[in-house]
Image: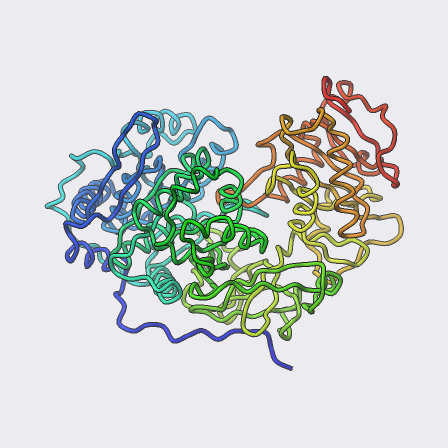
Length: 636
């Protein structure tokens, strides 16, 4: 029996010892070239920001001198920047100082994000915060409010920072930390992944071999600088190869998706990637008139990762934008995670992605077989690591064609979680293998990712993947926002129902539904655009979603909660936080626009929203005895 694993290619020889060495070599050789261009979007005709390699070097030296003066050498430094070139200067300044950069989202007045950043600040023990002049006073006030007034702040967009001439190179080794990449927390609280210089160099080399990058290459994107693909793929890789990185803000893309595609044509971008939802957003928002003005002929590598890759998105995007010069082989589905620095596997950018139609029933039983019912996009082969598929719980290697947990070993696998020995021991196992928590299957050397181990929904002995259920429901009505739903299971029939529900999804992938008085129930929380609801009939929308799930999966879909846009929690990379949504549902913390729930599920809920404001007099909406409710003023 052939074990499902992939052996890496031989790494390139003669690479620099640290990423700081790489940056210094590039700045010496390419001093007057642009390293970064940022495209503002303030609606007032602002010109792009340019930062040359020499300018980056000068600013980084000044920042490094300041960090050294303030005792930050070898210590974490939090980077809280709006999109722009100041972040790049701050990150390289940390490298130049021998500090440990900690990229994080700029705190806003949103409680969830403020709490996240405060948690990162305390967890990392950051000794300083870097930002821009416009935000430093606000950050200083915020630091005082969270009882951390002694953490110093520096505006990295100033020209008079420190003394660049007094800078001296840090004594950094390959095993020293380059930065902490805080995980996005799709199934747990964020943790600081320790990325060493050796990890970063190994992964950048792997990306270069995979994507065929070269000196002078133009890379472009809009992903946040604290997102691993945005940071390592779009910013640092450009520095690694001596190229040009063209950037815009995430908000600029979300407001006008065409700007991303216009940027690719205007700057002759060769490499630019994003999660699946971004390609789908372009499909829905770019008009025929805008398409006619696009030139995508330079685009030759479009990574698609960070969330499930949908085969229909790949096909539709190529069909829609091929008149603009887009080549069919441009898509390169890939798989990676922060714990492996970034890239694990990637499809060959010179060939069309692998699309497989497989037997849905067999896949639910953990077997990849030719048939009908599910379409999977391959994520390519391993680049600088070994990939193995193992049985969850036991770690026993599985044969090709069997679904199990993805394990990874290689030079890009990071050093663990900062200050968290328990979590490190749990995920970073013996012999260098990383337990990813993701489910997948290998076939002919290609990885097909099928889901998250903790998110698998087990009903009647079948393993259902939440993103498949969400996709089916969202196809039922145009008012249901694609990519904005969360499917999960809850368990009834026990005293600790909420705890049981939370634990049910963590069972081994081959586990079966509980017997006796316990029962698993499928729940879908789905955002709905009220303006797109025909006749305001939310009941019809919920029924359509139930019917679509029932037809495709032959399971009862008695619990559908329709919520307003923005309710479904996401990670910083756009992944749906299904575990969080399950907790919010069970706590009664969601405010539905309309819901239909089975009585047993309704009994599980905690302190729900004021049910007096909900009309529960409607009749059953499904054959399993579910009842529905409506918000005041919304037609049933």
